Image (tube, rainbow, N blue to C red; front, side):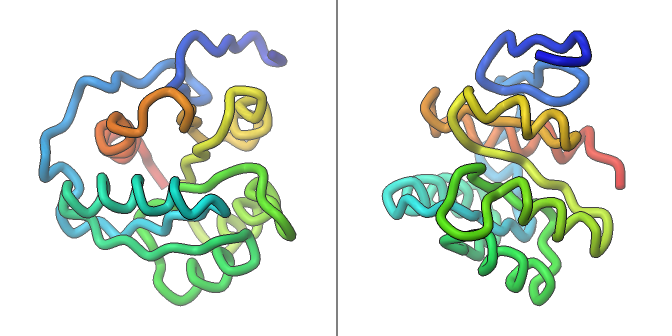
Length: 146
């Protein structure tokens, strides 16, 4: 990877690894999360995890829909796939973040980590274990500063 960063695990931020072992079952109570993925099975599984932690979840199936919903709902965090039909996750994230400070977490395969980290966004390997997504989001939000 460029910039001297290495991807040493499934959960990575531009400054290093984020522990997946923090947080509790209601860690995301009241947090507005926009979940963006074109795979319905992923949307259902991750939505269930986030809602069980108290999050308010809005979903989008592509980048264009994500940009519109982010402008309307002003989420605390956008959890987004990188590779999607139409407007991809990186382009959608750039558009969303240009409208104002927004915490964007990419959730995709490891081959997409470079583009996520280059944009300054944390990365979660969705193939690793989706049960850890709540703790990862909670840990990122605890560190995130607009």
